[in-house]
Length: 176
Ligand code: SF4
Image (cartoon, rainbow, N blue to C red; front, top):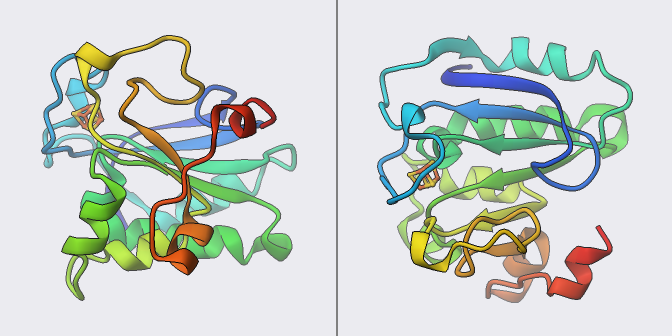
């Protein structure tokens, strides 16, 4: 499936636990003050990419622990990202996990999900979600994998099962 891509990082150790392949999606309407990637805001910029081609690139590297969907905001292209994440999970018995960064809050995604936007399809394919807008006034360099204190590192499977956002504690995160 086609999507607009801002870039690919084949090996990253800062976008989640372990060695990860990061997909930077193009397009974000949150426009957070202090955003590090304002070049990814324009929904029409970046280049057209194909999820199958990205998947083929991902599986070339046997050392990866998982894939991170970032941006931009991958939820603006939730359907192609859900398709990519599904393929990743069906590869080698689900050896690779999937993490998504989003400027939406978890509750916002659940409340706004509908058949057209694909939010639930993508949420169901995420193992973890780092949610919420970047708030410059709450910025902290001490947070693992997050930029500002309002953002949470959410266990999506548990959250969907329990019907509420279940965030990992700092202690749990330190073990990752
Ligand atoms: S959600 Fe992320 S990419 Fe979008 S404006 Fe905020 S910090 Fe930037």
